[in-house]
Length: 332
Image (cartoon, rainbow, N blue to C red; front, top):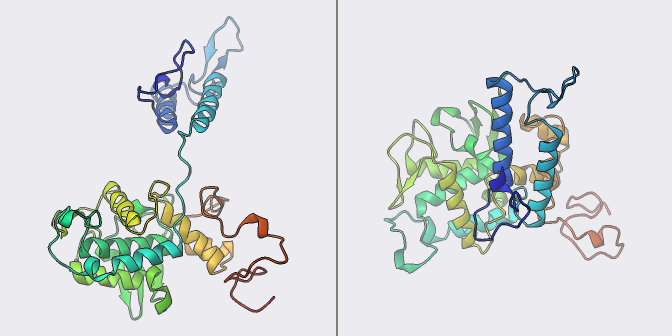
């Protein structure tokens, strides 16, 4: 793990020109060592300690020791101090999705046409109408259903069922739901003022243009704004690149945003904007159990809903939402 450290073994600082491993890399190395000693060498998961028989004989798993745990805690503190530890992905907001929706629906962006990278020398020309339709459908599905993006990108045509005014999404798997039946998502057309977060509208626009009737519905976008012929899902890396390009279109720095941003944003939207109780959110997405939902609702990396200095201010400035209940109503 010395490559992840900021100092050499002798205590001297490593030069800034030398590439340092990340804290996440150190965690993976420790996990690999724990598996190797525990399963392959048969040392189990017993902490590394001196045998009761004495004589300085050590038993247990060397990677599960006080020394290694202390090193990992110290490494984390040093990485945080140096600004090297990534914070959780910032949640997307309905305001951000509204800006993306309007920008992607501009005629020059939404119109289907032959597209070449770098056209007219403009940074805006990173994707055409097909790419933006795909993104809008993926954004809204991940946001409303609170899905990981590897779950969204692996949705196939037979997972979608149209019944009257609703679309039923049957996910074949969930990242944290390894057994038992996965409840389907029943999606309805949202009102016009929420068209920017409506997965039914976005899916209709994408499937109508792509004409995909079988296989994966979110496929790789090739050069010329063409949909890849091979029946393989778009990679998370390509999606993240397109998502970051889209954020730059509307003047938002893409660094804090990742593939979990929509899951976090959707959870906060249902709880704060729609005032769903936690039980209802958990029923909607069987993803959550114990208290893992808290990490999606609260993060220091998210944009604050309201400045904390106004929490108890009786003369707070007017807000769109009621300061007492969070709704747009005259209860106060």
